[in-house]
Image 1 (cartoon, rainbow, N blue to C red):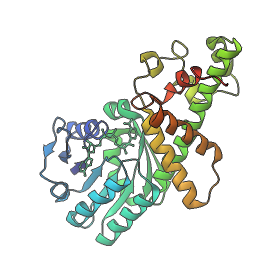
Image 2: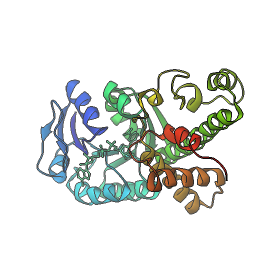
Image 3: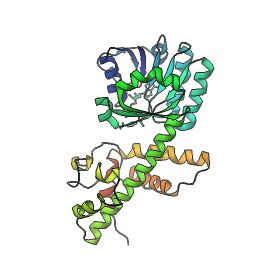
Image 4: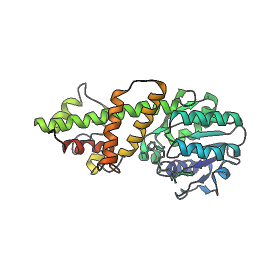
Length: 290
Ligand code: NAD
């Protein structure tokens, strides 16, 4: 397929490289990042869109997506598909979907989980919103970049699924870190706490797959001095999207809000920026009441 790729950073770079390696003709554009192996450099985002059957975007946020879409959508051929893999707010996804529809193009919001490792290995999970026929046309590309694709409904629903998932993740990681810090202060060995909770009702992905305590459970960023992994500021971004979406939809999310407050304080006022989101554990372990 003729593929355009805009946003070739930590995630987009390896995703585009994997598509080129499988024989797709990929043209790319990024304001700063170098072109990955096999990807032809275009002079602008609009140039990437010209003649492409699918234009993929992997950008930092919704405002940038809207700006890029203003340039790209008018340059797309009727019938082409804009496949946005960025994590953005639901409203931006739906606004760009409407813009594509007006132009006679398809739109899919397809945010991912799996991080940089998943992008590199081609094992990402895609959560997709948009029309089923557009998804079937994009599926050969998704199958190269990822291991699993879940169709979540209409445009915007991929982003909705992503922020609901990451609100669960942020809250469970924060409380799992709290439990370890509490165990410390109660004189309960971290390994013993893990052995009990990992096989009891306190079990979660945050505990058993991504354990925030170094030397406990499987290898995770905690064993690498909390180098990300998934950076605390990215968790803050996703919690912010969840809270904004909840406000817009009239949903009540007090625990999600508290998780966001904790991550905001960690990132903005403490030393959380650039550290893995599981570094909430040393942060809490160092604090004491009174
Ligand atoms: P990144 O900052 O490494 O890459 C973004 C790229 O977009 C940069 O190279 C930047 O130069 C480029 N860019 C910005 N504005 C542009 C413009 N107007 N035109 C062209 N290029 C432009 O970020 P990333 O880690 O690759 O993340 C991308 C998206 O994926 C984000 O929405 C993020 O939330 C999401 N995501 C990231 C991870 C992760 O672990 N890094 C995991 C899941 C989802």
